[in-house]
Length: 440
Ligand code: UGA
Image (cartoon, rainbow, N blue to C red; front, side, top):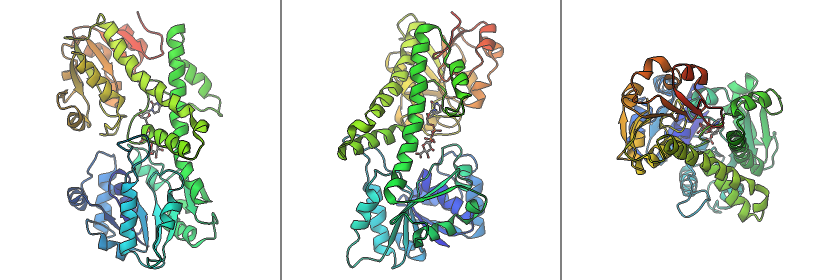
């Protein structure tokens, strides 16, 4: 099929390359000339394992190209909208200006019979609004919503072999032309057995925000248990293991620590609450405000614990920060708990030296005064306190015996509960997990 992907940011760039891999002719369109130039050279504009190879094979096959020219939309029969929906500057709701602009481009360059498929995360009711906005003399377009569930760091695998596909079509019917077209787009994963749910627009829009709200709630739930564990001497990781064996609960996304960050979960739960309030159903998801509050409280907890370990006054003390990205295998620092904690400690006067294998440059753009170094060893040199904030493999596998000689003090906060406490304690460290039994 001939496809266009409007918006070549995180979601769109990966999606365009994945669609070419599925055998389609794909044009990716974005207003950012620099980004289009890099993508056209086969260079991923952000760190994502496997993306570079996927881009190379797509460009090499001749089935994938990138352009800033919206007129290229005319070469496609099905258009994906994959632009961002960030939090609005003036509140918690989603900023839909990029979605509206992308749709306007399709209206200007699309043709009768084209199908427009949204992938961006949008407030429920958006598709209906877009459909109603098509002018009488505009092209005869069919709208569908196909939410995306890819995770940063696993985006290529999540796109090529998704764990489910959701098609939201106007009448909710699997027999509709839009559903049939999407079945052709995703013929390979469907053939491989990927579960498919064909539903109406509103359900498809809600599935996405409900999934992220559930994941966020699961994380804040276990972090709430960590708070209780901290005052009772219980161990939250063992608690998570024990409840996680119940298949109805499941162990995944039950890792207590500094909580969730990134460009999706935090803004999505806020936008969901804002939309529910607009719909007169704010009470239904009021618990999401608490989920947000618990989440942000974990960042303060680490800052306070660091101060406590440094004699209540972090000023002047040297702190090694391991990790700045919001999670490993990503260079993304949007709403990153790690970066926020590093910046807060710096603001309190601590001498923070941070290492991150891929996110240091992005972190410095947000906090230009932040001192970053290339390796954990450099960060650790002379440190009075070490804080693990992003569980990159190279940090989690540090040998506590080997690095003990680098620091001024053997004090570590494992803010991701990712280290082996026994090994660190045995090597003479004052080990502090979050919601975990500690050494001292
Ligand atoms: C999330 C969802 O997992 C994807 O399914 C969704 O498609 C995506 O948002 C999106 O809406 O685009 P992502 O933001 O890449 O994906 O990151 P996650 O893997 O969900 O992690 C989110 C945050 O939660 C990270 O900061 C991570 O460190 C934290 N986390 C995760 C925990 O604190 N504990 C856990 O047990 C799991």
